[in-house]
Length: 228
Length: 261
Image 1 (spheres, rainbow over the protein chains, first blue to last red):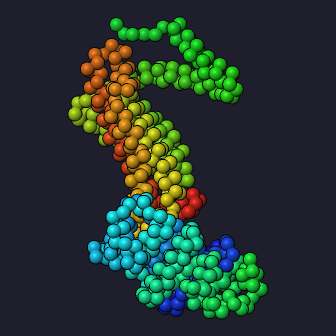
Image 2 (image 1 turned 180 degrees about the vertical axis):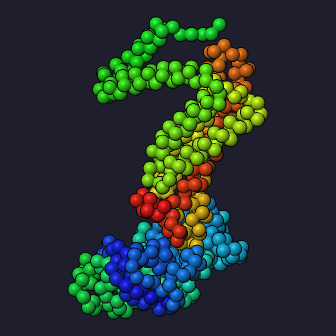
Image 3 (image 1 turned 30 degrees about the horizontal axis):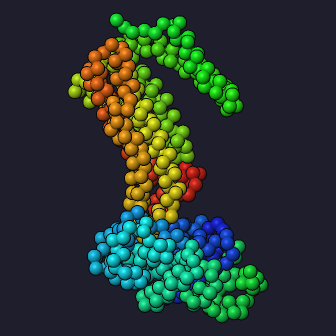
């Protein structure tokens, strides 16, 4: 589905890897290793300074950026909701493409396990966990084929983070989405991922199956990272 | 009879300067030099402009008006640019914006016979329009830069959902325009109730009947209101796109903004 060929953008150096459809990839590694930068390359919120990224066999530069971003959805660490109601937020994406249907509101609330009465609620009245669910619903409203997640639970308390994880787990399995997620939480990585890319100093140090690569790390760097 | 303050009386203004000066001295505010310098500078500037205006008012309108307005536009553009440092071509945009607004307002004044095409009427009134537009553009630029910084996450969210830069930045454009326009809306609401506006006060002191003074004040207040709205809107809409590149990506630093241009 995605192919990176010699892709560089500070701090990433000559990244070469491929991601297949329906894979659940966890990007992890020390802070500053370039995980979020890498994530933003998938939907062209960043451009590589060198190398080429292919999506479905075609250079990402050949897609109109609006179409690519619709197909490759992103959920950020902070919900970053727009002022207004929950409904205003979740119809934002589809409305850009003239694809919003009123009945989708309830459906999307169901996906993220929120009551449909929340649709008309002002986003300012929501808790942190609820806001992140709305952010997830807003991305799902575009019916993406790939879901990029940038530490979506790191700003939440343990309990709320677990609830969001459960929502994510169900969604990804039900909709057979390809998932690429940055996380520092190795418990979360084991639960949600089936492949791990350990990134350190801008390079893929290890690429393997989850949870095996966490149970028996091949490199000294990964061993040290897991012990920290 | 023309009211006049004698030079002797004017000298006693020193007393008014001594008040903040002594406050600064006793409370060690470190403003002594600044107070003396700004008072002296203000006095010299005003006398200079007084003599210059006397000279300009005697010149034929077709020479005096364009000459003074060009100076006003240039100074205002350079001043407003300070708030938009780092944005490409900002000086040019501000200058063009101010020029178009001034020419439009002046044309309307003349077409509807509100103001006579004489330096003594056009220059002070244009000065007020240009000055207020300059402040509005500066405020809009400053606010826009802050809003782009503060709303980085929301902008990323909007772009990542497939929004084009023009759509993604709607929220910021709205907030910027609001911030630039609200002071004027508020001022217009309380005009004459809280304080008598400067122009009207000046005319009344100059011996003009209050109702006549009000008419002039209305012309200038409404003209300022519309030119301020236009200035803020023009500069915001002209500059927001420099915060993005052609691939719908946010341009992060000011250096990047310059290189994208």
